[in-house]
Length: 337
View 1 (cartoon, rainbow, N blue to C red):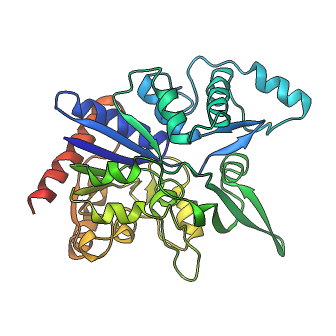
View 2: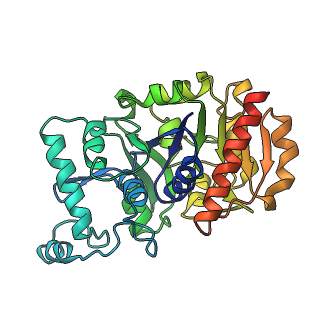
């Protein structure tokens, strides 16, 4: 069985760990298509936050307490850069993490595509999955914010980390998206899958930067990478999504602010309906919401989506594995239909 997960970073990585465990006793392979919209050049190196979060988590190296970066980090290099006035003092890169960025940058400057560089970095560990960036092209998410009577534009990570998503958003920009294409292996991973899963990741700035997400009320949406959404719509595999929203609040992060910026409501029902039924040109065959949101099932079912209410909180590895098994079971039922 071939399973393809489309994911963002930290929350998606936690689900990926459960999915890998759920598949370990089966004759299965796992491919993970990862958001690259958070990527950036910083202090001369190419930083790919979501790819690194996924790689570190699967390698058992992530800092579970902070929720990002490597465990056992030191930050001497960042302290030196700060002393020189270089980089972002509010965006600290650990020394071990910088080693990853330096290695990636070296590979990119030698002419490798991001997908090739990612494969080479991941080969260091037994990850139990293939990581594929959504695109080999540089497509970065920027945020146009309102500042008095004018506007200011900043990289998404600055808006997310420095302002804590408090700067009012006029729109999200995906610089370079108009000419970008899926990375090598992305379309094939979707087309050849037996199951496709949309991780419980931010629907706007994680999955949206891969698959697109519309705005409402005259607000601009995010376009995604051309060709990936179409691949999901065409695949013969059942497509199951896991809600990143429980009881009207995001599981982690600031998805509520992102949805508000697009004029969209923050609820499991709303996000599922926006993704839409594949039978009606959308992305989903099945949508998992938390038991707290079971009242959303009738509207989702009426839209053509096979919706189920199951426990979504991933408080530990066992809970993540159970959720992954629920997603695989939902896919099996959707395939039976």
